[in-house]
Length: 484
Image 1 (cartoon, helix red, strand yellow):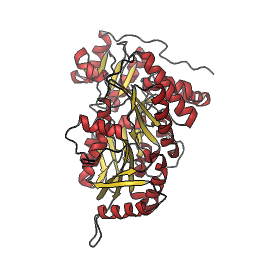
Image 2 (cartoon, one colour):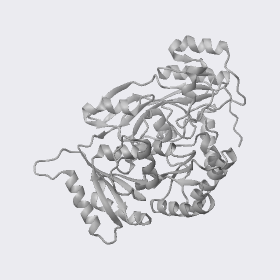
Image 3 (cartoon, helix red, strand yellow):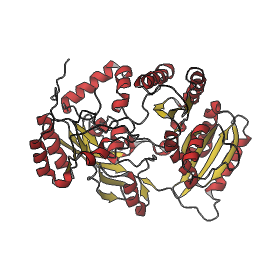
Image 4 (cartoon, one colour):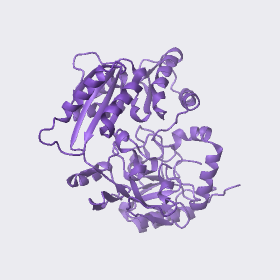
């Protein structure tokens, strides 16, 4: 079966196109100045593209008109919300022919419903702004990552984050959605029904979760919220042997149940990089040597401390004493500390690692939980022998099987910076992840241009065929950075 898309070729935007779009969107709704366009065309890690214009709608109707017009004119659109992605999924290529459809002016928070524990937001709303608004209601949107993304991008990539163990990801918190399909009509699907249960046929919103915008542009969302934690306790755990991490994780899950909200692994290399490049951080280990591996755990209660009840810090200490006494659990030490200080260290890892060497090769990968440390141990031995110029600075969501596997090219290395070196390295690591361990080449960052090669290589042909069939039926215009 063949599929024919309307964008068999692209054209450059011309003055006529710019003038029409400016008439619809106003002067603030379109940017064509190269200097002003540049921040929109640059990714989170400095990778850059070039765009013909940045289009900044304020409503779903505006988005519909833009998509319809650009579809008929064969102008390629790149949807963008927070632009915090790491796989080049929200920036244009370097042709200068693509236009960015930015949702940064679509940031209204409305219809907060504490009784239903839900809220309706426009897709350009930053998660920090949303949670600041929700705080007075004792609610929050519990998808926590160190960047400050927008809701539309979080849905498009099905963001998970550091507290996935307790709250899961965006998919579990999306009640309804409004989206403009990528077709010549700019058709609007309004499925903004904020019901917790609604089993009346196809759950249409699922098409747009984690699919990178290939079917259309999300403009609004109805979100399920969580109660703000009233009690929080955190600790750093130092395992005797990181290869026995699963026993420690299972033990804590058995003792803490659903109150265990985070189990974040941090390599010593990553911790040292963060402390070096963020002098304001407090070293939780004091004058002691930084361990080869540490785990940040968090337990939370959604209710206030009751009279006569011990503090959650004290309860965590008792739990850790129980773990310590269990000879089957490989715990060498534990440090209970202030949540804001320990999380500050965790959130500083990414930037610290990025600045720690000559060049960074970052992988967002996932496995069955029992395979994470096996993979890391295998890679430590293999890379030490074959790529000694690289330092592993891994960290991530060990509790749900995901890891940010970062390879840093040492500053004194004379190794080539050519694309061939990076391509060889990415192919090597990804092949081991997928073929040796049955893992995923993208845990939560999505596909984007950086992962396009691996989508093409590792996605089963049957799944590709179904994806193309759905797209051909509902959204035949090629939109965004992903090719299916």
